[in-house]
Image (cartoon, rainbow, N blue to C red; front, side, top):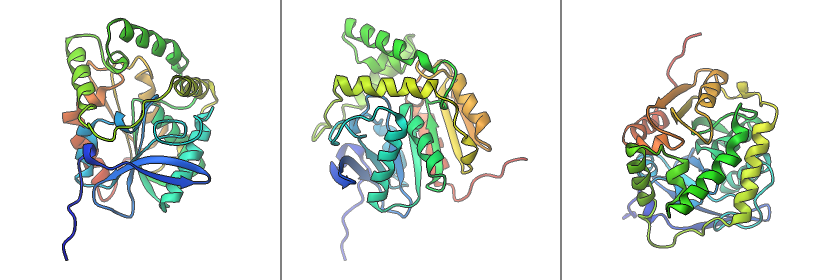
Length: 291
């Protein structure tokens, strides 16, 4: 019997919708179907079109990948929740409606914060966890995210640039080159693109992150599965030291800090990071750790 070839190109992944608990979620999936998929949790203001295809495609060669829009963003319905806890509850409703009782998670920035809240409430749901460019609830210095974000959005507006070039990358020669390359990769999908986030939704997400940063720390000892943490060494949005903080709180976690890079270190160093992520997400068993 002839079977259709498996799509592993994010640029060609069809847009889909799913209704759960009265909420409609926009999502895409690619790669060979499997019992435990890799669900991607996106960053502040991110939509389906904000994932680096070099990383998604590399993982989809080996795993089943699912990306989705949070409520009130892109093609999803409703309003952006006022807290990241609620965003995690929404994500859980989406995952349950898809029929999965176990997932692996790939997260970046705000997505990593939502993923943490999801695991704290549902510890048995997540098998493997990738946390990039993110920090823990109550992390020191995270309260500065609003000022940093608005300043960089202003700088981008003045220079007619994409804000991600300022927010994600250093403003040295290497960072500027990496930023432009990243933004160009995000444009590779030309058909059926997602809707950009609206300003009120963006502002609500930003306030939710600030609340997360000011809150009491979560008990991350509930995260017992394999965890990969990565960031650049000069993250101005979510201070790089918070990646070390996560590493110290999550037993057995692996930490990678890329040199001379910012919030988007994994995108600047995608050629190094993508194979690491693939190896982590395809390993049959976690590596043994010392006591």
